[in-house]
Length: 565
Image (cartoon, rainbow, N blue to C red; front, side, top):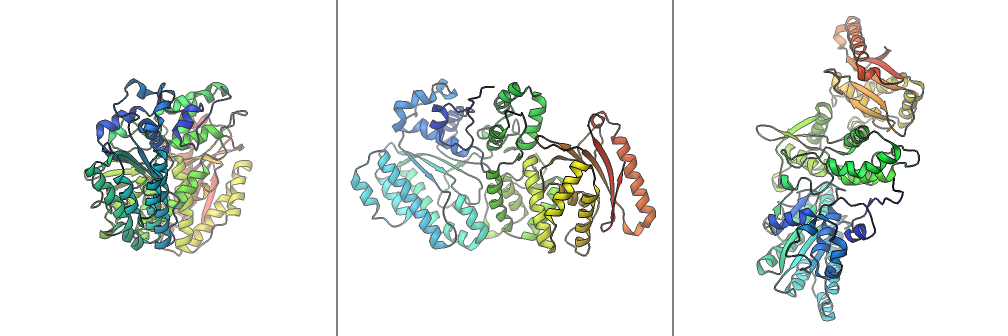
């Protein structure tokens, strides 16, 4: 393996990635496709999906002040074979709206105003406008007036406006204070007024092209009357692979690891697919997409000396981002949102009509919530129904986040506390001593706390959900639920995963015994489970597993017993 292979994890400056020899997955062919698609465009994708690097690519391609270095940057890339007439021909006005304080209207307005002022000053200096224009900019008070003034200085050719993270501050505002969100986005709001200036500038020719990225469509409806000119490419199947990585692109990135560590390509690719793939932005798209940041994180953190996977398959930065976005579960009816979460975890899929825009003044319903989860990357398109779409969790990373959040919600809703320390000891006993009893005890304690509550239904599926919730709190095992094996579906399999060293793997079958059926019903369920497990153990795929222990867990919703098979 090339020891000097440079992974651009966390980098979003296109010139830095290209000129300093970082590995780059070439997305430049989409430059020509964007030109063919129109002039004013929005492309939304989940957090950490390569949006900022993509928009930086556009900046270096179109900005006239990078004309002298254009060849050195783009010569070996796909776009060099189909250069467009607009390369190096624009003044670029770039803006990015993350990091704005949202604690109050005053803080939000001040942060937005300063951000706009800062980027406008950079633009004037970058393209060597006279100092008097910088001085004059200070005479304008509002973000809209500042922008209007600078756009009045632009030549007839017009500029290219690039906006990254257009909705970053708005998502935070909406999670905390919906009335504040509506006040800044509604008629007369300073954000609405800002975009009205942009729309007017396209009519006058001051702005020739626009490209905007963000995560959700929450702002789009609020801005409609002020900014209804942009084409939303987020659901266009021709741009499904524009950001993130395809299967082929991911395999190419993994090739040095395969060669250096003599890894089996299909096994490595299967693992990376399970953890990071699964995103679809159009139901008829050719393939599901990998989250680019997650793949780069895996390669960056892969132990090249010992050829082992990262201890944490989930990037802490992504965990932090998604943790903040989880606050959006408070939008609308939190109880209804919880029911969607419960259905998603227990059924695996939820149907909904995908919202292209949100009209928050009319409310926020189930379809809105599921669509919001899709924009954030918590669910993804998995199919279509007669009246809408089907959504499911894209991969193991998101599944892990869901179950961690589900524990928090269980505790909050039922006013209970599940001991993390006791649970940690139970997982250690499972991995090192091959004993399930400590985990069964923790599960029984949780069941007894929940037994007098009506917020969690109890059946076999919900028993499994509770056990999975406990297991997902520690990333020791690769957890598989109802994995298909020769038309058989073991409830839970706990498989060894690099780099954790466990002495035992486990197969667990769960059975729910109704209280009214008494001891006879309990024994019948126990025997049914034992026979199922014995059948699983004859499957070739399971027979190949080393140090496997098999269990049947029977519960009536309060009491619980585990039987080794």
